[in-house]
Image (cartoon, chains in turn blue, red):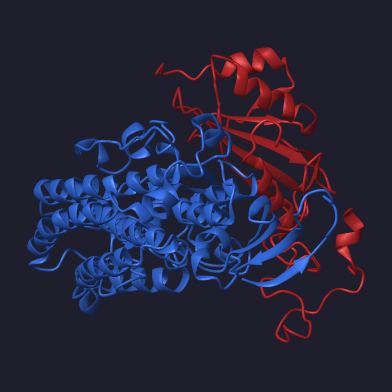
Length: 405
Length: 174
């Protein structure tokens, strides 16, 4: 915390207080990235919060207008970089809706499997980071250790730890490698007990509870008006999960509970995520059980590369399609579509206007973190002290890359 | 959840001021003028038959060289009834639209984003400032005529040359 400026020293002359304008961030560790807050303080009491975002703005949407549909996948990775498979999935669904195609069943299972794995990885960060922000340091070291297991699985499946870019329009890039299912099940067995460990470590921890319980309480009506989504909304008692209410891919075949809590304080938002990891484990197991061998990419040579690469050696037609696809991309018919998925942070929407060419005319990302973060500027919840603001940022779980797009 | 979305109810209530966009297939979509936008939003939020309490997204679009050039696309969602609805609002140049922050608080940052990227002015907005770009930034980056690499200046030597007539678009619009 730097740059403390005194303003208006004697505005409230009769009280022994001075209004201070304080700058929090953008390099402060508790802001989870490059979030800068301008706080108007009366002593220790926060009177007004003004978030300044955009320090990580890369113009993703502008870039998308000059990229072909396949080239956009790596850009979506870099939105919420904790859960790239989930972003890939949302974008792929939008393009597939425009093309009027559907990925093969096996691809859908693998996509959901990866999306849920990434949800665990994303939630693990906040499970540890929120306690760290409020003074319980230990948890982060454990959650980071366990997140490494998820990273290893990602590497095994896609070859990359973070920016997987594993989806393709009409399926996924490769099938699961041999022995992967066993490794994932092994992870599920280990991780189930680890969640119980975190709960044992933190749920009776007085340092942690004193800082998060009854802090930053957002009522259900406020949460909806603010446009909160995902765990932040469900913690306030609104029972809405896109995976259950408007199922995409194969979510309608999976049995899981939607975690809803009542109070809507920082603790509930944290706890909601911890419980969601357990549900994700359930879904991962079901995916592995239900998955059947089969194609993992649509067999349309105009949209997807050939699965059998040896065809490139002797089939002239395959060769031409491959060249066209690599050099120019595929055309998407004129139209517009908005698809929303339940990303780990909330409703992730992709609105695409296609003009019939290989590149989207306009692509809008409805980034959940961007909307969730707005709760800070509206001063939602009962944040009274500076310390409460820190707990609030941590529990809203913004990923700045997604906020700034 | 009833299957059929009562779209004709909106049309009937607004009596010709709201038109259905028949080209859109993925969800019901209506077109409205900026004048009737706020009234439509209040109606959709408060009417028991719709209850659109969740505003998902506001998206600005620039259709250069088509006219009218600008468009605002609103995506609404009804948490109790599970419906989605798209509202399109066509804007002339220079683009001006009424704010809907009174209807949904969440519109605040979305509108600031549309202002920042397209220079769409939201009348009555409580705090209309740039949100991503810095205050001194010159130009509206998401417009179709803004170069992908930006304009040339001391920090951006590879950028495009700024046309002579377009000296200070920020002041032109306000």
